[in-house]
Image 1 (cartoon, rainbow, N blue to C red):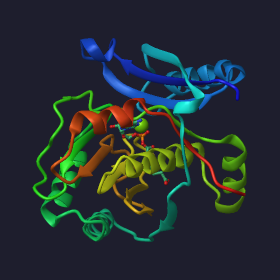
Image 2: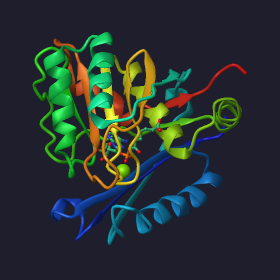
Image 3: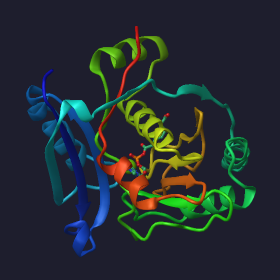
Length: 248
Ligand code: WAQ
Ligand code: MG
């Protein structure tokens, strides 16, 4: 089997994240050696031409993934809600989170966190009952990487269901977050023009209008049930390679 490489990018403006630069964009893929150049180029383009601003710091990391460490899994199934206003959308999100096992308090705390988050470049981890933040990662958050779709399967899936590269990346991420043993996830983009977000647990539920156009808030909350070995949970999300595939 051909070796795969994890390639991931993070970009900031005003210097690196470490010295306080503002997070612009990130991205992560699992590709063969031939894919590396192409995806490096795509990720650089994404960082330099982004609606949150033009990055002046770009970090690209590549590491080889041993083929026998890869987990293969089907993608979550997708549902799409329709609604017209941010208020309705956020109420739907609370309802879906509760259906997945999150308390109303924790659901509202998650929404409140993302509403005010313009800086975190990863996700925060939240107790699904109390809504307490459990990780100590500050504005770095937990950044999920080492994940992707098998290219053939993505092409078939996309022909059937539609979906952009953004949808592709989000479903892969939500599927890995689910596989890690999370209760649920809440997300909307920090890109000002992209206002559809999702709640994921056993399904990936797309919700339009989770924010107003032009709003640069966005982020991710991973809900977990205690007791949990946080270190192991984070290690899985950051390091263990997961590939989405089906049997078509
Ligand atoms: N790991 C953890 N958190 C991440 C990651 C990652 N790999 N990538 C992004 N985040 C967090 C981070 O806080 C970002 O600011 C925030 O999520 C939003 O990232 O079905 O585009 O890449 O139509 O802007 C969801 C709906 C789109 C897709 C989400 O997020 C659909 C999106 P973005
Ligand atoms: Mg973004």
